[in-house]
Amino acid sequence: MKKTLSLITLVIALLSLNAQDCMYPFISEYVEGTGNSKGVEIYNPTASPIDLSNYLIVRYSNGGTSPSIGYKTTLVDTLQPYSAFVLVNGQTVTTEESPACDPAMQLLADQLDGEYPAPMYMNGNDAITLESQDGIIWDIFGKVGEDPGTGWCDIDSLNYVTGTTYWWLAWTKDHTLRRKPTVKHGVFQNPGSVGAPEYFMVQVEWDTVPGYWSEADTAWISANIWDGLGTHECECDPSYNSIPSFQTRENSLFLYPNPVPGEEVLVKGTAIINQVELINAIGQVVISVQNPVQRGDITLRFADDLSGIYFVRVRFADGTQATQKLMIQ
Image 1 (cartoon, rainbow, N blue to C red):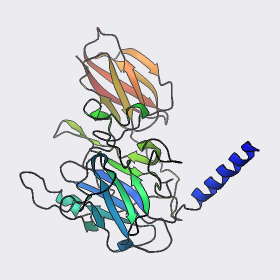
Image 2 (cartoon, rainbow, N blue to C red):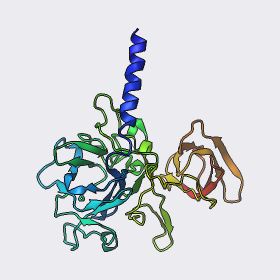
Image 3 (cartoon, rainbow, N blue to C red):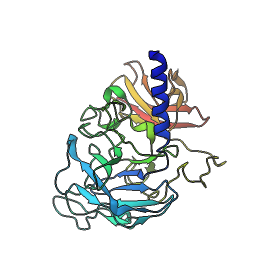
């Protein structure tokens, strides 16, 4: 009898959740750039216009459980069906204490946020919510009441200790994140509350936008990518086409740390990793390992007598591969 009741409860919960698909606006993109180049995108998954003056963007700073005065911004304008609205940091002048938001990003905005401490003065460890004027939360980015250090990541055991030691693991710091097309409504319950997942696991509903190699900076750039702001792909849209194009997808590979002072390096990719190889300077495969789990990361371990320049080659589950130079000290 108890099993029957549990099954009925589960079915009711699933039906209730599905009934809220494509009914309410949600946060569809999150840009945590350098300085004050910050912004969020709101998507309308419904067939009707939405009066955004009924909604607020709220920042819960550094693990705070209630926003301070000035941490709320009322949105403006009307958001048309299956369209996106962009709110961007509004600072236009650089001071000794605070840099201006990049003007190129501000040109993409439908609304510029107010003066500090407005929500778009966020950092990667600030929870952001979309709320209605009557206090109902329609979406949560992050976890209200939790300070993850530098930002949230995709590893349970490290999700709330990504501070100084694990700064390079944080997805929500110096990255642009885009909601997966399969997401049809916001997060209504704060992670850790009754009936909600314990953690804010970024990769469940969000994709990180791949960066690019800058020859000028001789570095991989992962921040300040906002060319997708203003449009969003969602399965709620009747015109959404989930059929992939025939263009070859270029996956990216990241190594942390690099140079590596120890005997292991974390290998992260923009797709599921099947195999990792360590190759020396003359092209010999020194180490070859299969990823034991279906994940986009794997730790590569090697002997303590290795040093010098090597190459890490990754074979992804989709058939593509990527190579990155690694310095072992």
